[in-house]
Figure 1 (cartoon, rainbow, N blue to C red):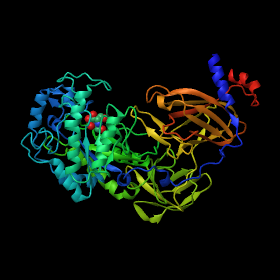
Figure 2: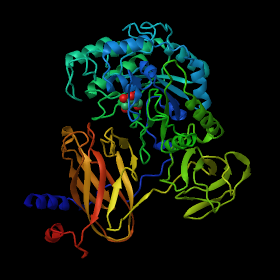
Figure 3: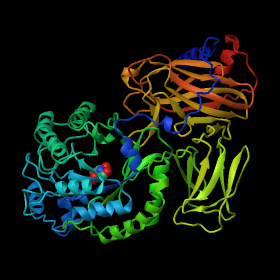
Figure 4: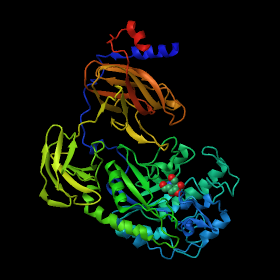
Length: 614
Ligand code: FHN
């Protein structure tokens, strides 16, 4: 207890009224939404594109979820059949030999993607089963040389993409390979009981050097410009991941790389982040991201999985993702013959027309600047807000709060000939819409503003106990600080290493008083001792980072106390105190809890004890 009193006392004494500190009450000037986006190498086409087609296709597609009377449960991925039914390599190789996808039609696939509104295609060049779906000189275990097909689907697809103006991209399973004795994952044929970090380095390096890297070089050399390479399932070490990043960027500097290239339990390299499969952040991230999603429950074709998403669900997911600032990569699983399942075509045929008539509100837009909207979603382009109304209002009124601009006009995207009336006051803008929703499942109302949208910062309110929770959902980050996704399913604020990299919140104090400040973060050993400042008004808490263990081991620490004597809105910031070469921390949250004692204390050491024993 003595120790914690002492440390709290030090924390408390570190609350200083600084006359020399930066003017903390002055908020960083509002920026246009577009200015708030981070720089990324060649991300422009990707940000514009929004919607892509994922194709999982390989020998597993021929099995369609069943082998020798044994079925892969529909809750499991059909492309995992080799592993899930522990099919021996030699048997699986014979299955692969029979793959003869005579119905594969690259133009049909590309046309389908195009008509659905998809701007890029990512196809499995090699999935975990180790079979290459292109003409590889590295190993004969490929679709051209192994069986009788003799055609190169990736060549045909890349050429069809070029003809139709679609970006050609490929997926490559770089760590997992159940065919190669050194690849990760096959412990039924090979004496290989590797855990996630424990592995036979010599065997794995052999696999990397004689298969994975040479195949990637082929793919990046023989198929024209590649929009992006989609790696999967991470790597053993961040360094191995970085080697793949270098390999791709050396051969095609403009090619994007998804975040799963490295050891994603530790950090996420790559040019953008892949959310978890079918996952989505509950709020906007500043870094660019993409959600890969299945159309039923599996990626590879399964004759058993008929639980298809409806066209309405697909459209709504697309808009929800785009409104949160991401891309939507929607999967199809062709059959072993190369046919596109009828259900896929039917769903896509309903998605495409909606996307086409609402294209302006999707492509090239940026994220919703408002927080959750009760009636639907919002995207932004230039001076226009696109309000995607999911729950059409029974009273004919769509309400929008927090907009600081003036609105010039409002209209339905579907019918621009008629202007909609609207009223504005300081609090909100109310748009009068027709009684019947003009489109389904979402109707788009356009609000034209007098400039790029400026939105009042979201305020954080005290809960019923008087506490305030500050996290990535309500933060505004500037400089290099960004909100990030980690592959363990969490979100945090990261990438900051200098005093200009700031996370800030606007907090609304209704019940003034003294608040204990608790901070929750994860920090590596190398970040130990980095200094940071939490500031509110003219109070500053100075603290040092304590390392917490593994990469995403978040821990809560008491940081100090803040006092707010009056009700009102206050800007609270946290930033690195000094310029450093390392990250400050992975900040999860800052919590302010009112100290029970209501009596107002003066800030002197004499009353510190009583305050701290609270
Ligand atoms: O194991 C794979 C799976 O088969 C599929 O390829 C998905 C697509 O994101 N990725 C892996 C699981 O995350």
